[in-house]
Length: 193
Image (cartoon, helix red, strand yellow):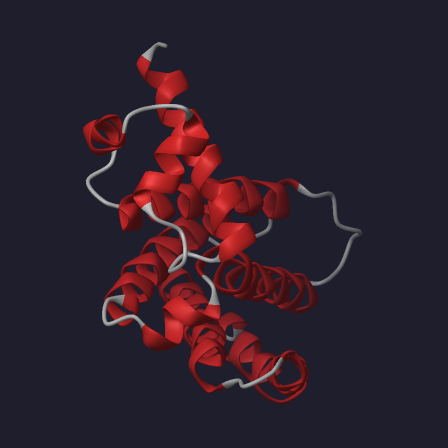
C-alpha cells in the first residue's frame, strides 16, 4: 500500500471504531486489526491515538466549514447571515464533541481540556479565515477583530456545553438559550462599527 492509502485506512478504521465503541474503549491494537496493518505501522503515521482523532476531526471540520461557507443562502442582511453562520458552526462544534470525541473523553480524560483548547483554537482560526472570505463581509481591520471576537465567544460558549450539560435535553436548552438570549447581542456588537 502506498503511504496515503495506509494513512487513510488507519483514519477510517479509527473513525468506525470511535463511533461504535467511543474513543476510550478503542485501542490502537483494534485500529490496526481493523485497518489490516501492524500496530507499529500506525505509529509510523501517527504519534498516538489522540493524533489520529485530531486528524479525523480536522478533516471533518474543514469539509464542514467549507460546506457552510459555500452554501447558497437567500439574500439577507449581514446580521441575519452572521446569526445563521454562527449557529451552524456552533452545531458543528457540538457534533464534533458528541460524535467524534465522546463525552467520556471530554469529562474523564486528563488530556481533554488541552486537546479541546487546541482543537478550539484551530477551529477558530479556520472559521475566521473562512468568514473573512465571504462576499459581503467587510475587510476593515476593526470589523475583522470583532468578527474574531464573535467567533471566539460563540465557540467557547458551545464548547462549555460539553462540560456542563448532563443530557441531550440540557444541550438543546443551552442552544436555544444561546441562540435567543446571547447570540443576537454578540452579532450586533460585532457588526456595529
